[in-house]
Length: 361
Ligand SMILES: Cc1ncc(COP(=O)(O)O)c(C=O)c1O
Image (cartoon, rainbow, N blue to C red):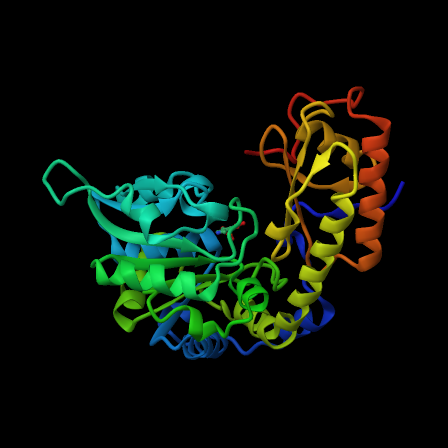
């Protein structure tokens, strides 16, 4: 059996030797007092890169997304979000728990949307309804299928949102994957976005850390929220040093992850019993479906697990495989071999556990 190949997520990456050296030699101070030079440098650099006034280092993508919601909404408000959006699906109900905010969902192709999709769920401003305050975007999309928003579509929907008086937030957990996949510059994407959350702990390979970027006023509000949430750290420069290292060394490697994803997708498209939309593979996330006649996604997850390959089941039939910094071309080939073997053996007799760790919906 091959050694474990972990395609569940790009969050499983481990810091490289160079990153560990950067962490070890980071200059640090007390960030709660604004005295960590490495955090300050990261925040300054990210604000400049996105053409915004300020930035705030956060523990996780969930935290920086929720700090965005914090900056814009108050109890009784609603945020408008695609039905597959991470903020609505995978953050433990945080908008309701933390802010008393509800999510009004709408549909759209691949986790992306048009003005008409948002308009389809709008309601009058009236005492009966929550106040629609914020439009949330995600790029690249995750549950939506790893899609990269076309620049003009993103600009026109975000501009329209601001013109309607809504605040705008971008969940850019994989923001640099979007820039690489879409061929756009970071600042080009966000002129009509008020706050942007970007993760360093996914494709960029950091052990933890995200950042919220926006206006000075929004970041000041978010900073207070971060304190209240217990997310203000002290010598956080060890995390910021990893992020700075990633900005300098790992963004260029994302194109390789995308190439690996395409390679995986193309070979999966030739396997009987599996269906994949090759046109929808635009980043490092590869989604495909197990045909009902062949079995279920969970059966394939287990069949692959027994062959040393880890992927996620994201529905009865749907599988997600994610390429990242710690996956080589050889490991893509080995994974394809394992998928072919599992499918040709058949999934009917796969040993299932009552509940196994790699399936969630
Ligand atoms: C699109 C998206 N947003 C936000 C997050 C949350 O990040 P974290 O796991 O660091 O809280 C994730 C995590 O996978 C994600 O995929």
